[in-house]
Structure formats: C-alpha cells, structure tokens
Length: 408
Ligand code: DWN
Ligand code: ZN
Image (cartoon, rainbow, N blue to C red; front, side):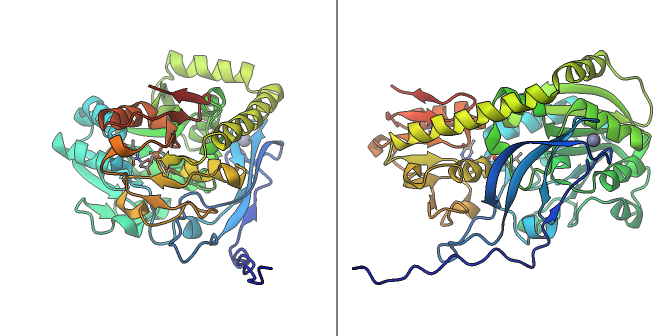
C-alpha cells in the first residue's frame, strides 16, 4: 500500500485582503446580477516555479452586472499589490499581432501626440512606435519586470496623485491606456488623473476588452482576477460624465478576442458610433442576455473538456492568462502534457493551479506528432501559420470562439 502522504496544499494566504464588491465601481449602485461563477481560481499570471506548485493566492471568480450603467465586474477584488507583486509575467511584445496593432495606432495618432503618456506601458512596445514617429513619450508601469527597460518611465500605478506630484497637469497631448482600465479598482481616481493630465486639446485613447465581444466569442477564459471590470460603452460614458470628460468616439477592434477603443476629450460631440452603441446596449444588455452567455459558456467548457480528453496526450501552445483560467475549469485528466510558450520569463514555470510545465517550443516541429491545443486562441491565425510554416503536420485544436480542429 502506498504509505507516502501527499502534503495538504498550503492554505490560501489568509492575510491577503480579498474584498467583496457589493456595489458597482462606476455608478455606485447595488443592483448587481451574478451571472457566471468560474469557481475559486489561482491568479492567472502568477506562474509558479517547479518547487512552488501550490498557488500563492486563490479567490472566487464570479461575474456580476450592473443594471444601471451596464458595467460587468468581478464579485471579489484581489489587491493590485498581490496581483502584480514585483514581477508580471505577461510581455506584450511577444505577440507579432500586438506589434501590428500598435504600429497601426501610432500611425493613426502620432501626429496628434507631441507628448504621449502610455499608462501600463509593459515592455514599451507601443512607446517604441511613437518615438519612431518623433513623439516625446512617458511610460507609466508599476511592474518590476520592466524597470530595466530603456524607455522614459514612472515605475508606479497611474493615480491622480501621480499626475499632481510629477508636474503632469495639462501636459499630455495624447494619453493611451490599453488593456489597463479593466485592471483598475478605483476607476474614478484613474479617470480623474487622465482628466487632470490631458492638455486642453488633448485626447485620451482607452482600449478595453468589450463585453459584447466577450459574449459573442464566449470568451469565458478572459475572465480572471486581473480583469476587475468588463466594459460597455454605457459604463465608459457614465465614467466620463462623472469627470467632465466627453466620450467622443468608439471603435470595435478584433485584438485580444474583441476590444473597444474609446476616445475621450475635454470637449466635443459624441460620434454616431457612440450614439448607436449606447442604443444597442440599452436594447440588448438585459438579464436574458447575461443568462444566455452563462449557459453558452458552461456548454463550451464541457465541449472543450470532452475534446481535450479525447486528445490526451497532447501539448498546449500559449501559456496565456486565459490558458490558466481554461485549464482550471477542466477535468485534470484533460490537462496537456506541457504548454509551449516563447516568453522567456514563462519558460520553466508551471501553469498556476496545475502541475503543467511551460517550456520553450520545440526546435524541430516536423518531429512533433502529438495534437496541439492553442490556448492563446485570440492569436490562433498567427500561431497556426507559425506551426505549419515550421513543419508541424499534426492536428491543432482551437478552443474558442467555437471549439474546432485544424487538421491537415
Ligand atoms: O489584459 C491582458 C491581456 C491584454 O494580455 C493581460 N492581463 C494579460 C494578457 O493576457 P494573455 O496572457 O491572455 O495575452 P495573450 O497575448 O493572449 O498571451 C499570448 C501568450 O502566448 C503569451 O504568453 C505569449 C504566447 N505567444 C507565443 O509564445 N508565441 C503568443 C504568440 C502570438 C506567439 O507567436
Ligand atoms: Zn453601474
């Protein structure tokens, strides 16, 4: 009989102040509907070393919607000091698709931006595009992972106080905040900082994953503790109104599974796109829509689980944050043998909440015959092309927006 005793998993850090939100962080009202529960999960980007297999922190992952301003938000907030403790594994520049996205943004807005502030500048991918157009730039980035990078930066979180104490009031011709507003708990302090820093004729460009795109692509694996809020045009306008800013335009983007680009200014008239999307959300974002998404997500989890159970042993590609969420909804028997990822900081670690190792991709893909599941499915075109060009002839599984196989 096997007498070895597996040590009980270390208890979740009780001292971590995981707080429950009982009111909408934008409008303050308490009329919230909980509509998707992904269980108690580890932090999606908290990749563990081989000898630290138990997650540092686990917390409930429940999505709830505000009936008033149509913001969706997580029921529980993990403090940013815990989420982004020291280093942060995600590096935006690894994805060629993200470079293309930033090239297009800089090409479209660089002439407007004599002085450009990039909030959550990460590895400086976007700022490099603007400096190439001759702009003066400043990156605001709290993670220690990027402290050594050469771009001009403030190693801090974006707050109103940061603007005031760094003489930034009224200075920015262009402020860009990509995929960060969804990570912020005090969105009013964040937006007031933007209001204060924006030059009189300045523009703020905020990009966020869009709730209706999340519903359309059934992207339940983009719901994780970093993403405190899931934005709509209605919620963005409510936030702008509260700070005397005007939401002048919105644009739907395909990046990151479907995002929204929102443009703010001190003055201006909302475009037809703003008016149309507000009306669409007023019509569509009601209880049945939320419950229908929840049912579709639950069915998708089961379908993905069955597909992967039939593929074992298989390997994953893209140790994305969404990979962590997806694996933690699966039957452990459906886990991949390994997840390949080109991000050096992720290699040698494990997918949080699992014992699945993350490794550098093989050098000879023609010798790989096991199925591959693309967990970074929002880049599936880029990744499939990369694997085929490298000589991989096996079957490729893409879990979302619809579970599908790419077979040769
Ligand atoms: O909000 C966030 C979104 C915007 O980006 C952050 N919280 C974290 C991050 O989410 P993610 O990790 O799901 O992002 P990606 O870009 O979908 O992650 C892709 C993963 O796949 C990365 O670890 C890099 C890797 N990758 C690779 O190894 N080779 C990706 C591509 C395209 C490749 O060719
Ligand atoms: Zn609200």
